[in-house]
Length: 206
Image (cartoon, rainbow, N blue to C red; front, side, top):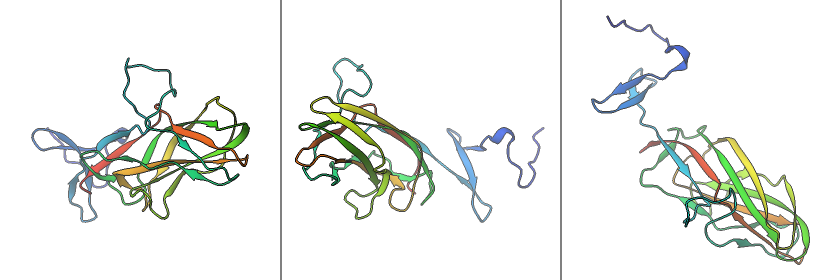
């Protein structure tokens, strides 16, 4: 015989409670007024470097979409790529939250020098609205990579725990990458590689 649950008691092993609409099962949360709310979260995955494949398989991090970005020639100045947008059919807040949602993934950037040899620092930013005045920094200018001439160097950054905020908290959103070059008079050519991705969950219509 079914037993009534106790107040403030969670399911064992941290399992979520689910409710049914007669066809599908949805996770349930409880509002501040103690009412049960059906949380219809949906997973998403964004591949900003994806491109059409001719054979279905490639070596990891060897292809990218679109045209690579060429920087200016002023040393230690940050130059940015265009924004790449993720805009699927269904939209909503990440984890259904205004702030504090979580996104994870991996970002691989390929870079080479227009001429000569130098060190570069890579960066990335993310925002719900492209060209916003103050986007969220996803990758700070902290790592330097040595590149030489036309030899493309691939650098991969893990995104284990990117917390959302007021600037980046929902789908759709956009990302952009940037680079600084230590050598004045030369350029850096850089691009997002195909193996890159960002993933999480949204609660539609929030």
